Length: 204
Image 1 (tube, rainbow, N blue to C red):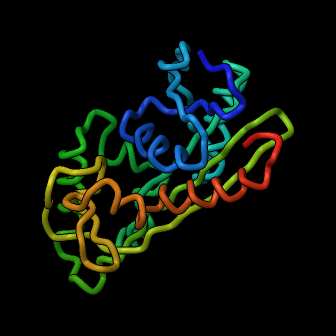
Image 2 (tube, rainbow, N blue to C red; image 1 turned 90 degrees about the vertical axis):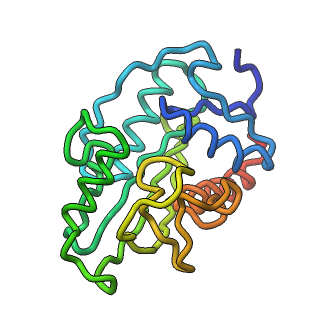
């Protein structure tokens, strides 16, 4: 059970995301726990916002309402310039809700098969919402600019990581988790959140 003020519920059913939250928030003294670890079943939340920030708020509020615990949620995705910003907020459902990560990457590659290297620019965006109470909400956002590779590389990370090239040319699918945290959109957003939380002496 969650008992301390430094325990924050991570409102996500994605085990990979929960691990990233744990790695980045733990140095601040925050114990990030999943709903399962805290003894809750959050079920599925309808993400009908029009932006990453709106969806993050929807998820954080749903978790807080269900548990009464400080809740942190993120909504993130891949925005490809050659596809007019797609998949965007539909990143996890791009192509089909039934697609595996590999099928979704293959679908993206097929849609970009005629796009030259110089026009394959893209970015990962992450919006985070931390709900401490109904009227106490902290938000942060992180962006990682990069580009889309011509083929899948490695099996590290999750989602579109094996297709995403960081500004230095390294693929998220082949770098270590620690290296990814330094560069990634979620890492940047969580570090911003950490700085905001450090100012809250009543919490940390």
